[in-house]
Image (cartoon, rainbow, N blue to C red; front, side, top):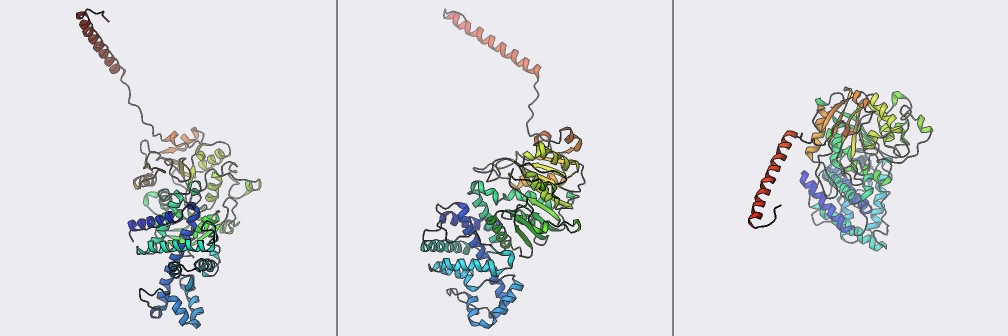
Length: 534
């Protein structure tokens, strides 16, 4: 499927969602819609694997036969089911019973079967608890099929679900879906739901173009970006991963085999589930990623708490878009935490540097970290100034990139990207002021491909471009008291043309002469008419 067709599929599915959700809030309906698309994807992938496994024994049905082929095989081979499912767990890594496959769900919806809701509920529970290993527990935990938002009675809720499933099936049937196409449509839908979710959007979505900048930067060779991409990224981490789009962007940038394993952490349970679904929908195997539900600031992920430095988990690339100026409650004990003890704690009013230091601690010596933060981290004083000063003196801040305002659904403030390294070759800091380069939109502004490419290319080759970018020495930064306000180093203000005072004087003299001539002519007319002169 082409990119245009994928985009069209996303638009078709969004139109279905927008039409069916009625008065339901976008972020409420999102979870139902995306879960059904995920079930459809899992079913399709599983049935393809089943066909390969059973070969000629896979039942062949005519187009008008609505039965589920796998169910027929189950009915005809009851003694072989256990061995078959064991084999599927080894090869496909999961199992779905025939009655819970998307094809059967669609048939129940088409015939308005009263058992649809009950079957869906049991199917989701089965997938959570028995399809995969324990790492997929709670995958559908936020899907409440008995919510009054779907209908006040079981019958009304069942009818609503019949409509949603039928319309999704119709919409998808118009397209030939491949491994990644549903994943890309899913990604499109997440963006559309974000656009309609207001302030909550920032919890789960980073606009694609901003994701692309971070992904392209961390994919470059960390010691000499001019040589191009790294050969491989063994481990990539996003410790505030939302729906996982940043991580998937890194994988897309490096190619399917260019990333060893993906690691993500997410505090919000609904968004955590979205991320796990999103990974599978993009063809990332369950053995190729690990998403943890937890709080990064508390560092409650066991794999990141290894006290032996030799066994410490480290990452080649780290990307993140944490909550902006998040209020947190640092304790005295946290000041001794291995992530913060050499820098001090970020203030209660803004955890921005706490998030940054959390990720930076786990960056490999030859790795690259790119994080989206509000501009305040560049110039605020107090504890943040001390942290900023140490990072600069240690040579850890590689680049500061200023982006246009109003790029996010959840906030209109302009943001910046900080690029950090533990061992960087340059002893200066690259500033890029890209605040003036964007496409204006009705609700949000957007970065164009040319804007993204210009930022990445400027970073890669460390270009000095008038009113756009400049490499600034540490001496100059120290002279500015470690203030990293971008406009201080790269101003986009247009210089006024110099004024030629002699030329201006000559013009004024000429104007006076013209006034005098006009007055003399006017007085002559008045004299002829016998009127008083001016």
